[in-house]
Image (cartoon, rainbow, N blue to C red):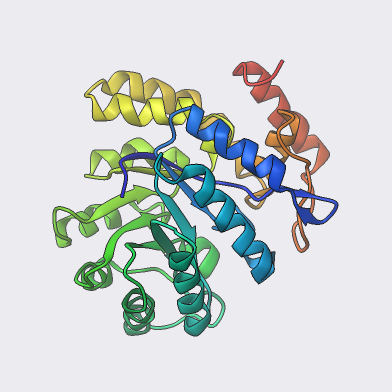
Length: 291
């Protein structure tokens, strides 16, 4: 699929409608700054509060803008396997290059249920499938042995790992084939996951500093490890602030400060606490992101 930085892009809203003009400008901004993959309709994209029509509009515009330049990966997660399958088939029909499939949330399932869920969706399409493990949000962890079973499904090509458990990532690397891809799902784990055989990041931070995020990945891949370390350390406080409230609340606040989108979310998400937003703004000034 890709090596380096994929951006888990936000979905901008304006007057409670999807702001397609702002979204298109964001796509151009990311591609102009070296992003290697566009990942739309994930957690950061507030996919769970979009209508089916809005989902299709977002996918269509993403494909129109990005096709032939960088891969387009569409989030198709649901706790209902039949709906996830339908979303995946629609993404394929609209021209996506791959899909991102999160573990079922709320109703949860066993490890065997995970295998059957992923297999059912993967078998319904010909696109590459990226599994997404984020137990802090879903309440379900994909165990390494289960990842190995998923890797045996022909078109499950990799995993976005956001468990924060490096020992688990290392065990996944030990069990899966060499060509199975592992991306960090946490911006503060980019280098640690690279160090145990990972391939990059699907990034929230990349929404605001795409060039710097890709530069970090590129430096590591080119063997300039100290340069990569310096960038990882430099952005650590920014990462902390971007996750001091539920994602994507802070990243939307940051992009609004940059003048790129309206600071608008859909319930149950609400705008960032003012004191925390002021701290985020100050760190953005410190890093030269805004003046």
